[in-house]
Picture 1 (tube, one colour):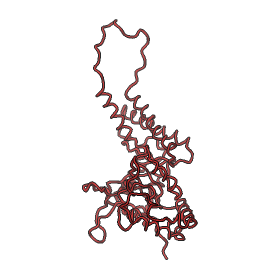
Picture 2 (picture 1 turned 180 degrees about the vertical axis):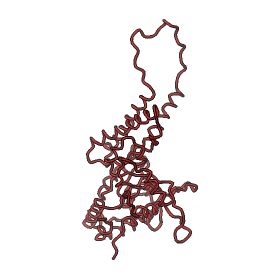
Picture 3 (picture 1 turned 90 degrees about the horizontal axis):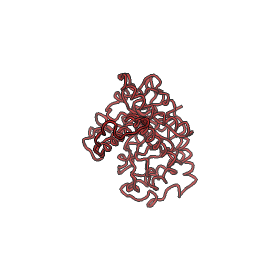
Picture 4 (picture 1 turned 30 degrees about the horizontal axis):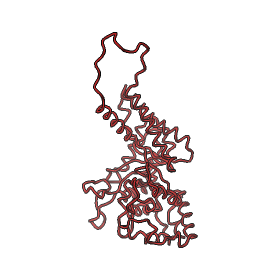
Length: 372
Protein backbone atom coordinates (compact mmCIF):
# COMPACT_ATOMS: atom_id res chain seq x y z
CA UNK A 1 0.00 0.00 0.00
CA UNK A 2 1.26 3.44 -0.84
CA UNK A 3 2.41 5.34 2.21
CA UNK A 4 2.14 9.05 2.79
CA UNK A 5 4.33 11.21 4.93
CA UNK A 6 1.67 12.75 7.16
CA UNK A 7 0.45 9.33 8.29
CA UNK A 8 3.70 8.93 10.16
CA UNK A 9 4.48 12.51 11.05
CA UNK A 10 1.13 13.82 12.30
CA UNK A 11 1.74 12.66 15.90
CA UNK A 12 4.74 14.97 15.98
CA UNK A 13 3.66 17.66 13.54
CA UNK A 14 4.66 20.32 16.00
CA UNK A 15 8.26 19.61 14.99
CA UNK A 16 7.62 20.90 11.52
CA UNK A 17 6.03 24.05 12.83
CA UNK A 18 9.01 24.77 15.01
CA UNK A 19 11.44 23.97 12.23
CA UNK A 20 9.71 26.26 9.73
CA UNK A 21 9.70 29.11 12.21
CA UNK A 22 13.41 28.64 12.77
CA UNK A 23 14.03 28.98 9.05
CA UNK A 24 12.22 32.27 8.58
CA UNK A 25 15.44 34.31 8.87
CA UNK A 26 16.96 32.68 5.82
CA UNK A 27 19.30 35.53 5.01
CA UNK A 28 21.49 34.76 8.01
CA UNK A 29 24.70 32.81 7.42
CA UNK A 30 25.44 31.40 10.86
CA UNK A 31 24.69 27.89 12.11
CA UNK A 32 21.04 26.87 12.20
CA UNK A 33 21.02 26.44 15.99
CA UNK A 34 22.50 29.79 16.97
CA UNK A 35 19.40 31.98 17.04
CA UNK A 36 16.42 29.66 17.55
CA UNK A 37 16.16 26.86 20.10
CA UNK A 38 15.36 23.57 18.37
CA UNK A 39 12.82 20.98 19.41
CA UNK A 40 15.74 18.58 19.76
CA UNK A 41 16.91 20.59 22.77
CA UNK A 42 13.49 21.69 24.01
CA UNK A 43 11.81 18.30 23.92
CA UNK A 44 14.26 15.46 23.14
CA UNK A 45 11.60 12.78 23.63
CA UNK A 46 9.22 14.26 21.08
CA UNK A 47 12.06 14.86 18.65
CA UNK A 48 13.08 11.21 18.98
CA UNK A 49 9.53 10.17 18.08
CA UNK A 50 9.65 12.46 15.06
CA UNK A 51 12.90 10.92 13.80
CA UNK A 52 11.54 7.41 14.26
CA UNK A 53 8.39 8.31 12.32
CA UNK A 54 10.47 9.92 9.60
CA UNK A 55 12.68 6.86 9.20
CA UNK A 56 9.64 4.58 9.13
CA UNK A 57 8.11 6.67 6.38
CA UNK A 58 11.24 6.58 4.26
CA UNK A 59 11.63 2.84 4.73
CA UNK A 60 8.12 2.30 3.39
CA UNK A 61 6.60 2.57 -0.06
CA UNK A 62 6.49 6.15 -1.29
CA UNK A 63 7.69 8.36 -4.14
CA UNK A 64 11.34 9.16 -3.51
CA UNK A 65 13.03 12.53 -3.82
CA UNK A 66 16.69 12.87 -4.70
CA UNK A 67 18.30 16.31 -4.69
CA UNK A 68 21.74 17.46 -5.80
CA UNK A 69 23.41 20.12 -3.67
CA UNK A 70 26.23 22.25 -5.12
CA UNK A 71 28.27 22.18 -1.92
CA UNK A 72 31.34 24.41 -1.55
CA UNK A 73 34.78 23.16 -0.57
CA UNK A 74 34.96 25.95 2.00
CA UNK A 75 32.85 26.31 5.13
CA UNK A 76 29.17 26.90 4.28
CA UNK A 77 28.63 30.64 4.04
CA UNK A 78 24.85 30.58 3.57
CA UNK A 79 21.94 28.51 4.80
CA UNK A 80 21.34 26.91 1.42
CA UNK A 81 24.81 25.34 1.56
CA UNK A 82 23.93 23.20 4.58
CA UNK A 83 22.67 19.62 4.32
CA UNK A 84 20.58 20.15 7.44
CA UNK A 85 18.39 22.84 5.88
CA UNK A 86 17.15 20.51 3.14
CA UNK A 87 13.60 19.28 3.85
CA UNK A 88 13.58 16.28 6.15
CA UNK A 89 11.37 14.31 3.73
CA UNK A 90 14.07 14.22 1.04
CA UNK A 91 15.39 10.68 0.64
CA UNK A 92 18.79 11.27 -0.99
CA UNK A 93 21.20 14.19 -1.03
CA UNK A 94 23.82 13.98 -3.77
CA UNK A 95 26.83 16.25 -3.30
CA UNK A 96 28.08 17.84 -6.51
CA UNK A 97 31.60 18.22 -5.04
CA UNK A 98 32.22 14.98 -3.17
CA UNK A 99 35.92 15.38 -2.29
CA UNK A 100 37.70 17.79 0.07
CA UNK A 101 34.62 18.09 2.23
CA UNK A 102 34.71 20.80 4.83
CA UNK A 103 34.38 19.45 8.40
CA UNK A 104 31.13 21.38 8.85
CA UNK A 105 29.53 19.60 5.88
CA UNK A 106 30.96 16.25 6.90
CA UNK A 107 29.62 16.74 10.40
CA UNK A 108 26.11 17.12 9.01
CA UNK A 109 26.14 13.58 7.58
CA UNK A 110 25.24 12.16 10.99
CA UNK A 111 22.40 14.67 11.46
CA UNK A 112 20.69 13.83 8.18
CA UNK A 113 21.35 10.11 8.68
CA UNK A 114 19.26 10.36 11.84
CA UNK A 115 16.36 11.45 9.60
CA UNK A 116 16.79 8.46 7.30
CA UNK A 117 18.30 10.66 4.60
CA UNK A 118 21.17 9.11 2.69
CA UNK A 119 24.09 11.04 1.25
CA UNK A 120 25.58 10.00 -2.08
CA UNK A 121 27.59 11.50 -4.94
CA UNK A 122 27.85 11.15 -8.68
CA UNK A 123 30.58 9.62 -10.86
CA UNK A 124 30.13 10.85 -14.41
CA UNK A 125 31.77 8.90 -17.23
CA UNK A 126 31.65 11.98 -19.47
CA UNK A 127 33.91 13.77 -16.97
CA UNK A 128 36.45 10.96 -17.31
CA UNK A 129 36.63 11.33 -21.07
CA UNK A 130 36.80 15.12 -20.75
CA UNK A 131 39.69 14.88 -18.32
CA UNK A 132 41.52 12.46 -20.61
CA UNK A 133 41.16 14.85 -23.54
CA UNK A 134 42.61 17.58 -21.36
CA UNK A 135 45.56 15.40 -20.40
CA UNK A 136 46.37 14.65 -24.04
CA UNK A 137 46.18 18.35 -24.90
CA UNK A 138 48.53 19.18 -22.02
CA UNK A 139 50.97 16.49 -23.12
CA UNK A 140 50.94 17.79 -26.67
CA UNK A 141 51.54 21.35 -25.52
CA UNK A 142 54.50 20.29 -23.36
CA UNK A 143 55.99 17.81 -25.79
CA UNK A 144 59.70 18.51 -26.51
CA UNK A 145 60.94 18.74 -30.06
CA UNK A 146 61.70 15.40 -31.61
CA UNK A 147 65.47 14.62 -31.82
CA UNK A 148 66.94 13.77 -35.19
CA UNK A 149 66.57 10.11 -36.09
CA UNK A 150 69.99 8.40 -35.96
CA UNK A 151 71.31 6.84 -39.15
CA UNK A 152 70.82 3.12 -39.61
CA UNK A 153 73.25 1.17 -37.46
CA UNK A 154 73.95 4.08 -35.10
CA UNK A 155 72.73 3.87 -31.52
CA UNK A 156 69.53 2.07 -30.65
CA UNK A 157 68.97 -0.89 -28.36
CA UNK A 158 70.53 -4.19 -29.18
CA UNK A 159 67.90 -6.17 -27.29
CA UNK A 160 64.26 -6.90 -28.08
CA UNK A 161 61.75 -4.10 -28.47
CA UNK A 162 59.51 -3.13 -25.54
CA UNK A 163 55.79 -3.37 -26.22
CA UNK A 164 54.37 -0.01 -27.19
CA UNK A 165 51.51 1.31 -25.05
CA UNK A 166 48.83 2.69 -27.34
CA UNK A 167 46.80 5.82 -26.56
CA UNK A 168 43.70 3.66 -26.22
CA UNK A 169 45.29 1.25 -23.75
CA UNK A 170 46.47 4.27 -21.77
CA UNK A 171 42.91 5.59 -21.63
CA UNK A 172 41.52 2.28 -20.39
CA UNK A 173 44.07 2.26 -17.58
CA UNK A 174 43.31 5.89 -16.77
CA UNK A 175 39.56 5.21 -16.78
CA UNK A 176 39.88 2.35 -14.30
CA UNK A 177 42.18 4.34 -12.01
CA UNK A 178 40.03 7.49 -12.13
CA UNK A 179 36.86 5.53 -11.42
CA UNK A 180 38.50 3.61 -8.58
CA UNK A 181 39.73 6.87 -7.09
CA UNK A 182 36.24 8.35 -7.18
CA UNK A 183 34.73 5.22 -5.65
CA UNK A 184 37.26 5.38 -2.82
CA UNK A 185 35.64 8.62 -1.64
CA UNK A 186 32.69 6.57 -0.42
CA UNK A 187 34.77 4.96 2.32
CA UNK A 188 36.89 8.05 2.91
CA UNK A 189 33.94 10.23 3.91
CA UNK A 190 31.30 7.70 4.86
CA UNK A 191 28.90 8.19 1.99
CA UNK A 192 25.91 5.87 1.73
CA UNK A 193 26.62 5.03 -1.89
CA UNK A 194 27.21 6.38 -5.35
CA UNK A 195 25.34 7.29 -8.49
CA UNK A 196 27.02 6.53 -11.80
CA UNK A 197 26.17 8.67 -14.82
CA UNK A 198 26.51 7.36 -18.33
CA UNK A 199 24.90 8.70 -21.49
CA UNK A 200 26.97 7.31 -24.34
CA UNK A 201 25.59 6.69 -27.80
CA UNK A 202 23.41 4.09 -29.49
CA UNK A 203 25.71 1.08 -30.03
CA UNK A 204 23.40 -0.23 -32.76
CA UNK A 205 24.74 2.47 -35.07
CA UNK A 206 28.38 1.40 -34.61
CA UNK A 207 30.46 -1.22 -36.38
CA UNK A 208 34.05 -2.39 -36.46
CA UNK A 209 36.73 -0.48 -34.59
CA UNK A 210 34.27 2.15 -33.37
CA UNK A 211 32.09 -0.45 -31.66
CA UNK A 212 35.14 -2.26 -30.27
CA UNK A 213 36.46 0.95 -28.70
CA UNK A 214 33.04 1.91 -27.34
CA UNK A 215 32.62 -1.52 -25.77
CA UNK A 216 36.08 -1.57 -24.20
CA UNK A 217 35.72 1.91 -22.71
CA UNK A 218 32.28 1.19 -21.30
CA UNK A 219 33.52 -2.06 -19.81
CA UNK A 220 36.53 -0.38 -18.19
CA UNK A 221 34.16 1.99 -16.40
CA UNK A 222 31.37 -0.41 -15.46
CA UNK A 223 33.58 -3.34 -14.46
CA UNK A 224 35.39 -1.12 -11.98
CA UNK A 225 32.06 -0.04 -10.51
CA UNK A 226 30.84 -3.63 -10.37
CA UNK A 227 33.96 -4.84 -8.54
CA UNK A 228 33.57 -2.02 -6.01
CA UNK A 229 29.88 -2.72 -5.49
CA UNK A 230 30.44 -6.41 -4.94
CA UNK A 231 32.98 -5.57 -2.24
CA UNK A 232 30.74 -3.00 -0.52
CA UNK A 233 27.65 -4.74 0.75
CA UNK A 234 25.09 -2.32 2.06
CA UNK A 235 26.17 0.59 -0.11
CA UNK A 236 23.70 2.16 -2.51
CA UNK A 237 24.12 2.16 -6.27
CA UNK A 238 22.06 4.37 -8.59
CA UNK A 239 22.26 4.89 -12.33
CA UNK A 240 21.65 8.15 -14.19
CA UNK A 241 21.66 8.68 -17.92
CA UNK A 242 20.71 6.55 -20.91
CA UNK A 243 20.50 2.89 -19.86
CA UNK A 244 19.54 1.87 -23.38
CA UNK A 245 23.08 2.70 -24.52
CA UNK A 246 24.70 0.14 -22.22
CA UNK A 247 25.90 -2.96 -24.02
CA UNK A 248 25.94 -5.04 -20.84
CA UNK A 249 22.94 -3.92 -18.82
CA UNK A 250 23.25 -6.45 -16.01
CA UNK A 251 24.52 -3.85 -13.51
CA UNK A 252 21.19 -2.03 -13.76
CA UNK A 253 19.51 -4.82 -11.81
CA UNK A 254 21.70 -3.86 -8.84
CA UNK A 255 20.75 -0.17 -9.03
CA UNK A 256 18.13 1.01 -6.56
CA UNK A 257 16.86 3.61 -9.04
CA UNK A 258 17.39 4.61 -12.65
CA UNK A 259 17.35 8.38 -13.06
CA UNK A 260 16.34 9.64 -16.50
CA UNK A 261 17.39 13.29 -17.00
CA UNK A 262 14.67 15.41 -18.56
CA UNK A 263 16.14 18.87 -18.00
CA UNK A 264 14.77 20.27 -21.24
CA UNK A 265 11.30 18.74 -20.91
CA UNK A 266 8.47 21.26 -20.69
CA UNK A 267 5.55 18.85 -20.44
CA UNK A 268 4.55 15.53 -18.93
CA UNK A 269 4.48 13.97 -22.39
CA UNK A 270 8.12 14.88 -22.95
CA UNK A 271 9.06 13.28 -19.64
CA UNK A 272 7.23 10.10 -20.54
CA UNK A 273 8.93 10.09 -23.94
CA UNK A 274 12.36 10.34 -22.27
CA UNK A 275 11.56 7.28 -20.16
CA UNK A 276 10.11 5.32 -23.07
CA UNK A 277 13.30 5.97 -25.04
CA UNK A 278 15.27 4.46 -22.16
CA UNK A 279 13.31 1.23 -22.09
CA UNK A 280 15.12 -1.61 -23.80
CA UNK A 281 15.79 -5.28 -23.22
CA UNK A 282 17.29 -5.90 -19.75
CA UNK A 283 16.47 -2.39 -18.50
CA UNK A 284 14.35 -2.71 -15.32
CA UNK A 285 11.10 -0.75 -15.66
CA UNK A 286 10.11 -0.70 -11.98
CA UNK A 287 12.46 2.03 -10.69
CA UNK A 288 12.45 5.09 -12.95
CA UNK A 289 13.09 8.51 -11.43
CA UNK A 290 12.69 11.60 -13.60
CA UNK A 291 15.42 14.22 -13.38
CA UNK A 292 14.71 17.98 -13.46
CA UNK A 293 16.36 21.07 -12.02
CA UNK A 294 15.51 24.29 -10.26
CA UNK A 295 15.52 27.56 -12.22
CA UNK A 296 18.84 29.37 -12.37
CA UNK A 297 19.31 32.32 -10.01
CA UNK A 298 21.94 33.93 -12.23
CA UNK A 299 21.04 33.21 -15.86
CA UNK A 300 17.69 34.70 -16.91
CA UNK A 301 18.00 33.06 -20.33
CA UNK A 302 18.23 29.56 -18.88
CA UNK A 303 14.83 27.98 -19.53
CA UNK A 304 15.59 24.67 -17.83
CA UNK A 305 13.72 24.43 -14.57
CA UNK A 306 10.46 25.61 -16.12
CA UNK A 307 7.47 23.83 -17.57
CA UNK A 308 5.35 25.33 -20.33
CA UNK A 309 2.58 27.67 -19.31
CA UNK A 310 1.64 29.56 -16.17
CA UNK A 311 -0.06 28.94 -12.85
CA UNK A 312 -3.69 29.92 -12.29
CA UNK A 313 -2.71 33.53 -11.58
CA UNK A 314 -1.48 33.86 -15.17
CA UNK A 315 1.79 35.38 -13.99
CA UNK A 316 3.74 32.66 -12.18
CA UNK A 317 5.57 30.28 -14.48
CA UNK A 318 5.07 26.55 -14.04
CA UNK A 319 8.09 24.94 -12.46
CA UNK A 320 9.64 21.67 -13.56
CA UNK A 321 9.68 20.43 -9.96
CA UNK A 322 5.91 20.67 -9.72
CA UNK A 323 5.44 19.29 -13.23
CA UNK A 324 7.67 16.33 -12.43
CA UNK A 325 5.79 15.60 -9.20
CA UNK A 326 2.45 15.65 -11.00
CA UNK A 327 3.94 13.42 -13.69
CA UNK A 328 5.19 10.99 -11.04
CA UNK A 329 1.72 10.35 -9.60
CA UNK A 330 0.02 9.78 -12.96
CA UNK A 331 -0.02 6.02 -13.41
CA UNK A 332 1.06 4.39 -16.68
CA UNK A 333 0.83 0.71 -17.66
CA UNK A 334 4.34 0.06 -18.98
CA UNK A 335 6.74 1.39 -16.33
CA UNK A 336 6.89 2.50 -12.71
CA UNK A 337 7.41 6.12 -11.73
CA UNK A 338 9.44 5.88 -8.53
CA UNK A 339 9.98 9.59 -7.87
CA UNK A 340 11.90 12.68 -8.93
CA UNK A 341 15.48 13.95 -8.85
CA UNK A 342 16.10 17.70 -8.57
CA UNK A 343 19.45 19.25 -9.49
CA UNK A 344 20.70 22.53 -8.00
CA UNK A 345 18.42 22.22 -5.02
CA UNK A 346 20.11 25.17 -3.31
CA UNK A 347 18.39 27.55 -5.76
CA UNK A 348 15.00 26.68 -4.26
CA UNK A 349 15.94 27.67 -0.72
CA UNK A 350 15.11 31.36 -0.90
CA UNK A 351 11.49 32.04 -0.03
CA UNK A 352 10.53 34.52 2.65
CA UNK A 353 7.57 32.42 3.83
CA UNK A 354 8.91 28.88 3.59
CA UNK A 355 12.39 27.70 2.63
CA UNK A 356 12.52 25.11 -0.15
CA UNK A 357 8.89 25.91 -0.87
CA UNK A 358 8.75 24.24 -4.28
CA UNK A 359 10.56 21.08 -3.19
CA UNK A 360 8.12 20.77 -0.29
CA UNK A 361 5.21 21.27 -2.69
CA UNK A 362 6.51 18.51 -4.95
CA UNK A 363 6.83 16.15 -1.99
CA UNK A 364 3.28 16.94 -0.89
CA UNK A 365 1.96 16.22 -4.40
CA UNK A 366 3.66 12.83 -4.56
CA UNK A 367 3.06 11.79 -0.96
CA UNK A 368 -0.08 13.67 0.11
CA UNK A 369 -1.53 13.75 3.59
CA UNK A 370 -4.57 11.56 4.20
CA UNK A 371 -7.99 13.07 3.62
CA UNK A 372 -10.15 13.65 6.68
